[in-house]
Image (cartoon, rainbow, N blue to C red):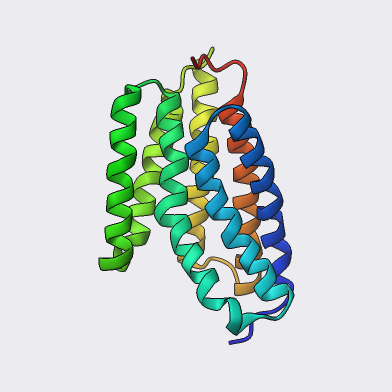
Length: 196
C-alpha cells in the first residue's frame, strides 16, 4: 500500500527533536541515551525520505529495520541512562547490565522477533520506575519525572489498540514521540536533580 507523503511531516519532528536531544545528552555525558535517541532519529529520517520523496520500495526495508532497532536498542539505551541517573546501581553493574541488554537484543532480533514489543514494553516499565527514583528536591518532582517517561508507554499502547483512524494515529504517535524526546531531555538534564 502506498502511504501518503504527509506522513513525513510528523517524522521530521522526531528528527528535529532527536537532533536536539542527542546534542544535549552528549553535553551531559548521557551517552547511552544519546545512542538510543540516534536510533530513533535514523528511523525517523529514513521514514521522512521514504514518504516525503516517494521512495516507498527503496527505503521500506531500511525503515522497518531501524524501527525494530529503535525498540530493541533505542528504548533500552535511553532507559539505561535513566537507571544510571537513579543512582540505584553502581557504574560497574550498569555496564554489565548494558552488555546483557545488548546480547538479549541481538538474540531477539535474529531468533525471536515476536518478542520485540514485549521486550520494549519491559524496558519502558523499567524506565518509568527508575525515573521516579532519580533524586529530586521534592516528591512531586519524582511523580512528574515518572509521568514524563510514561508518556511514551501510553502512546505505544494507544497505537497498538488503534483508537484513531490510520492517518490521525500515525501523526499522533509520531508527534508524541517527538514531544517525549524533548521532555525526556529536559527531565534528564534538569538542574534540580542531584546527579553526581
